[in-house]
Length: 242
View 1 (cartoon, helix red, strand yellow):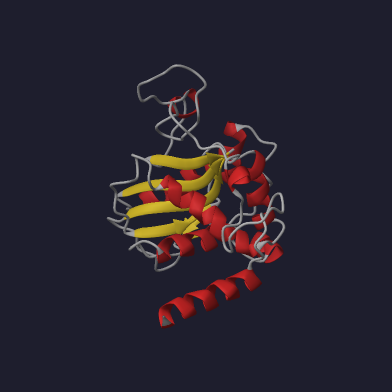
View 2 (cartoon, rainbow, N blue to C red):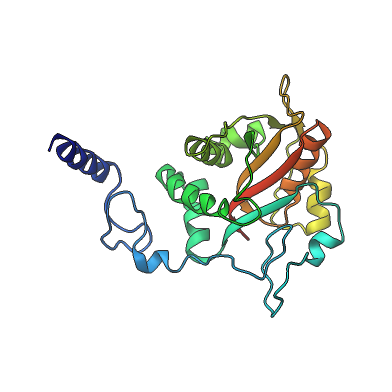
């Protein structure tokens, strides 16, 4: 009876912190759910066939595992990058509200989408020694007020046995990647990251975390730095793929 009463109190407190309305349409929902069933259904999962290396979806009838042309014609340093959802529509809207609209409570929803990536066959049976968020340049982090990848890594760490550590730092302020093609993105990011002083990843299995995977250039450059420093393996997980 006491436990039930405590549960009711916690539910009431949650309803004050997180209004019981859908983030997108305003419909009635349970506290802490963020999306109604109808809006949740509009979040598009990435399903096979997709590239085994970068999760790029393929609109076709391929039934076997394959590597896309994007990965086949350049050096990719991560072992695999897994994204759970397509970064469009409701998913894109939620992530933008979290990152740029400072709707911090939405990190829990984005983290739930991110956790879905860990159920992928490429990650499900792996144990990671450490979770490493993709870092922002200090100037950009001051401007935004937080690093979304760090917040997601902390939430993921709390639900797994893997610690989150900020082992990477961004040392070069790069122009926005939005208008750049794949080769330009890679050039833009070259030597933009380094291992933090006293960080030791030798022999570790690392899980890189970010909110969105676009071409994989950022994740690949981070993986290059980690492997050069002795990481045994580097996989990546994101909530969405643009």
